[in-house]
Image 1 (cartoon, one colour):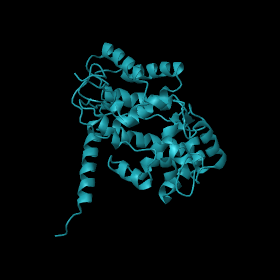
Image 2: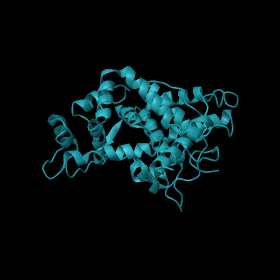
Image 3: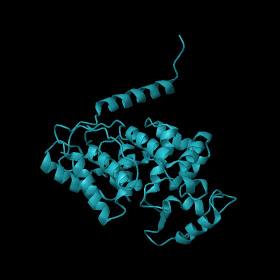
Image 4: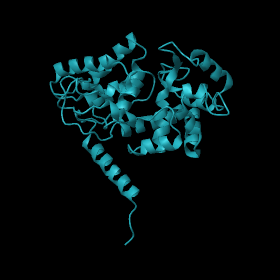
Length: 319
């Protein structure tokens, strides 16, 4: 009998886990128990956006960072305690914000339907609304996640780094049951928001032994980044917007990437693989194709299995 490679068994196991979780979630999960949940979240996200234009990017990033550590279980929302440093205080998450939006949503929903709607589901729905209200696509969010009780700052190492190359990205996403196609589509989320200098410093100063600046960067763009982020940067919040239409969810990210104007090494990496490069070109040409792919990949990512066991009454603390 032929031996089955261990890597195949591991992938099969991951697929079974992923499939089970997808079946466990349902788009009409709250139809009877909390019918106004989605309308309530949309209203609060909309109000928050009027007061702070950075909210959409923050909510989308929060959901991504939640799902990539322990699955989509709301663990990114938990506060650190005297005995435990939580995910939100791990290095990649220090710049996460807009947690207050989730707090406001939770309070209103608890008044409507006490003890019914999980914090993890609120994060997933708020991220969808953030995208849709910024001009992007909308999608049916599968619901029924439970909230996790464990949150460790050390586990944020599982998040993909902005300095990752293609093989590192591929491996990181595969471990979550996500494909190369998902990688390219979800990278398009970089159309919203802002990055601090530390995330792209490696490309504009001492890039390698032969170049000070990453040669794949367009020269004038690189110079503008160096101007904002000098070698010994002392400005705490210095950085650059992720694309030229930073509050609008569109396909500008892919167009800029093809023109040598991406911020991260992990963005540039998408052009080093024939399949991913082809998809970048496709989405740069067709915003409709990007929107369709992004919505599908968000549904897939938001269904990554978590180990949640409860519905928290306060998203910052376990019950």
